[in-house]
Length: 388
Image (cartoon, rainbow, N blue to C red; front, side, top):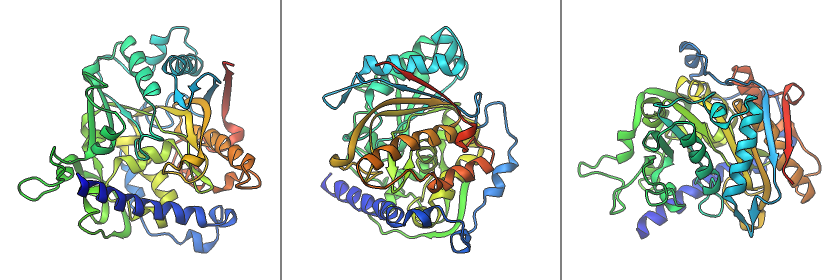
């Protein structure tokens, strides 16, 4: 297990390098449309349009509509309170759908018998993962609406990270916990034939191709599954779930944010290390345009109870704060645009930047151009609820 911990540190160093590069760019460059910034490696985004859209395709049932609930009692002694989280999600769901009954509100998006995937984010460890208060509240409300526990899957890219932050059978009895990348109980990522366990969990019929090589050493490879120019989708999204409820955390990425779109895109494919430096925006937008995500992500519930305003996507204690917020939308693009304001306002108040700079949100503009949602704030219908 000591060796595995070392591997994880090497992986986070690689991940951090991409985020550091993003953070180091001045705001004017991050928002630039200059020829230098436009000269990007080619991708297979044109393939995404080959699959016909469905009634569930992003931006979903309520394009451009976002509900934001604030609650000063949501976090006590830096611990999210499940009872308050439940109430915040309940208010959000009723407001978003216009229903008077919570079960009916949930059944706007899911139906009994469907396999429902909950996409959480445990990347930053116990300090800043999708909270159990929010996750347990979502599960309780799904059960009340007729979804059986056996049909609920909590998932992310890395099984070991899920377990590290408490997404275990002990804490979630009867619910499947799945990570694409995983190791056995001895800490080995390889089976007896020398093949990565993670390779068995990817679907090579679905991929994001980008003209950037992924080259990794032996210690990093288990966290990437494969190198080269292909990023394969996880079987979790292509085969194992019918609908996806996205539960990201409100975090910064340099002057931008990592929230709903990035949680989906980077959490669903392999070989992502190569994509951070040159194609961060494109990956966050374009991967979500492929059918396994575009047609299955029906709801986004941003866990903004605790988040960070600097140093993301990792967890630096000095930059973690209580936003005391839950944001809900079927439209992940609109949700990210509204979520950005919360992070930017905090960064301004802390003196990290002088003013909000939404021009950094290039991935949202790209996602909007792909028909995935509404990026223009003026076109977003925001409902604000303050529970005191």
